[in-house]
Image (cartoon, rainbow, N blue to C red; front, top):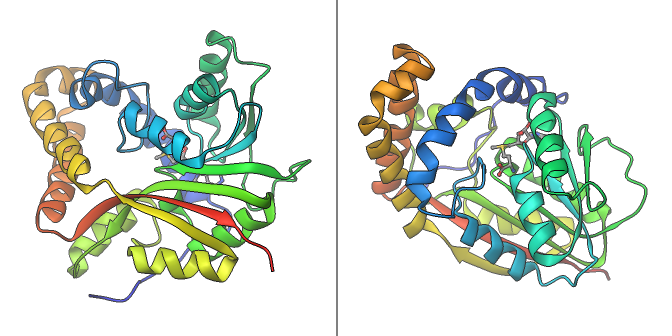
Length: 279
Ligand SMILES: C[S@@+](CC[C@H](N)C(=O)[O-])C[C@H]1O[C@@H](n2cnc3c(N)ncnc32)[C@H](O)[C@@H]1O
């Protein structure tokens, strides 16, 4: 299988912030139309990651942190996951995001859920923001793909208390990618690379984070991808009315492409949990 490749990665995350502040903002309305059908009743909560609400709760359960724990959501976006997990597990969650536009929606969501005392939101870069105290847990859903994993995991380790838990759900490379597949899976999403499970393991190990579990979520990921193409095609008229013909064509092509790469066995999806170990 090909070795990991990194696209040039800007330190300041301007490309990521631009993606979520501008392009993805229009994408939200399409997401809200397509994904309730993709995930099924009660499973769409506004999340941008490829996970149903049940999978997100399963990630929270796997972190195994008691009521009142302080937990960081890296790349919280509009904070659907922070809101869900704060409610379900009684955690105090801090959501951080470099993009200002999703955070405005996040503030509204948190206020409407009556969670202003339990969920704090920060517009900043997780590498440089000065957090006042260490966290019991850190998680990311659909966000870690934007980072250089060695740098991110080192930062997470520093932000966790000893014994603190890390969890993330991400796409993983499971086969040999062509140059074109590589480009489309990285550049088009402002992601520097697509890691294998083994690469993630090594980066976590070097950072002092012991892997507890790697759960394979590829079967449901395949389902979500399949359905996202089917639902898009069926709701073409509404999507074009909300956006444009060009948007429909480009976004459907991108979804279809990722679906084909997954079906060819080159792309999978995992939940990884790890613990900060010392000494
Ligand atoms: C695909 S969205 C996922 C949002 C959310 N976790 C969800 O599941 O709906 C990825 C988010 O990561 C954020 N992000 C990327 N790099 C970041 C960084 N260095 N610090 C904080 N947030 C970042 C982006 O702005 C974007 O909102």
